Length: 322
Image (tube, rainbow, N blue to C red):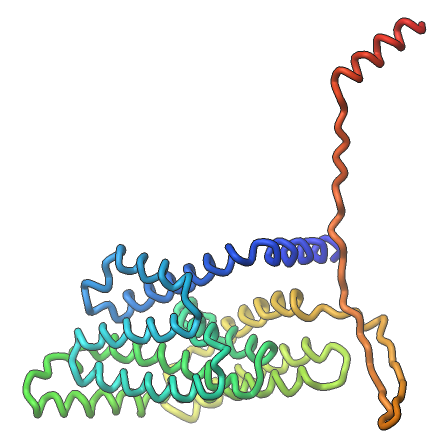
């Protein structure tokens, strides 16, 4: 445990020292992975799949705000949809516009959740995002998590129904394609189930970790993981959602382990040294529960330099004395 605390303090120290360099690199990697995932799932516009274009957009994003990165990825997705059909691009663009209105209105500082949710879906561990946002966000974090979830399933729907959505040259076929795209989004039971489950998980984790009990964060992580599994499995039984029970259970357990590591860095408390403090001023009495954080200073290595000339002179003097 001591070694882990030392490693934690060293990581925090180095990140604070080199934050100006680390942050752009992380933004570059997130955008690069996002573009690769988009091109792999809905890469219908050949020009945007060019590795040079992908690298340029990723490099550009490393110097842009995260919210601008979200808008940029949305434009890339809509451009790929346009390569399928105009109705498809119009519907997807409209859905993104509605999501952005809600997102920028209520949770504009949680852009990273919108970007990471589709990436985690590709990695088969999407449950890490709602669990994590329940700790670092609030109830309104449901909006950012829902936006990321809907964005992923929109790409997934287009990928699995490309033939039905493409080839709308005439007005009648375009209207038919427009209606088909809307139906595939609205009637997607899996998307609705996952969105509802993630929102419930965020709220449950947030409410439990706010309780005034010891180890509330760990209780929230365990209870939130169980709720996430139960809601998805019960929803899959009662609806036509395409969900793998083994995938949900295994993915949730892996996600919970990753979030546990996250809590170690941001909320590591020593409950054995809990103190209760009482004081007052002219208007109020205050009852405070103080729990110290577990910290460990990294050992300082002392380097002792020895002058070779001084050592040789000292040896000669010692021999002469003998």
